[in-house]
Length: 362
Image 1 (cartoon, rainbow, N blue to C red):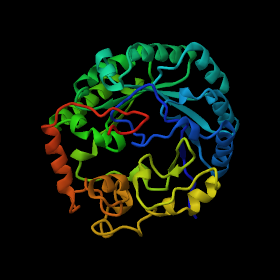
Image 2: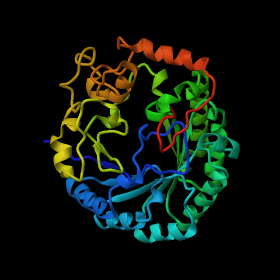
Image 3: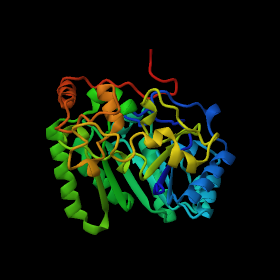
Image 4: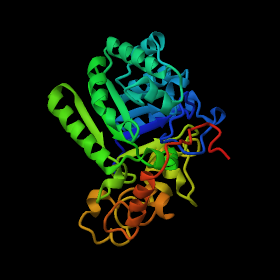
């Protein structure tokens, strides 16, 4: 019997005022005309609750671009789902936050590109974004909704991690995520400009350790490191098709954010099939679920039930095949690709290919 997923990431839209070069959205972004309707999303939330999902994370793009967001939150709450809003905050104001609060929103994760206005504008490409984010944080905290700050780390802001913790304390956040860039989608296109050095990573580890000692239980701290400096891979989303599902703005259902990059696969859609049948029986969710699909060296490795073979989309991005060991693993015959990427980044300039709705520039 297949256990139900714990979390649903509802990507309501790919529209976003920011242009972050590490965005986890696909390179080919979905247009407003293809987005699921309010009625579609409400039906999906019904099916998610029936399936056994516990948490729904409203994301994007920028989910605040959807005027029906309060209605979707209210519907999710009515089904007993824990609701989390993942937002840049730049469209948040007192009126729409009051609507979300009245709808029963449980939590907000507010993304910051940096601790400084200049650093934030360099990455997000939106003038005055930092001040809008600061105002959003103050409104959220004043309302009493629990607030997490998420900082995406790369080589141009990694040295300001201590200031990020200072900012979290000033704003009254309850949790901070210090998350190094993960190199899929736009992040992979900009890897050379974003990947920190090993020395920078080590300093970030020291900075996070110091913050944990400083804040103790007053501030929860999550720390996500870049795979490239590890010797063992991490399990893809806690295991492919085991704990998590992602629904794109147009209704495609994925085991992870980047799964659409896998070729020659038909992706199920909630417009055409039930969430339960997709989760339990669709080709894409069965593809790398469990361990029977594994090649060597994964098949005989004593960590196969721990790391699940690593990230399938990272294997695809670097080797051209999704069904091989994650190249991060020191046992992989493709580990040299990781080492080459690290060397390439060391000599790369800091010119970005910015996220844009029209896709990659020609």
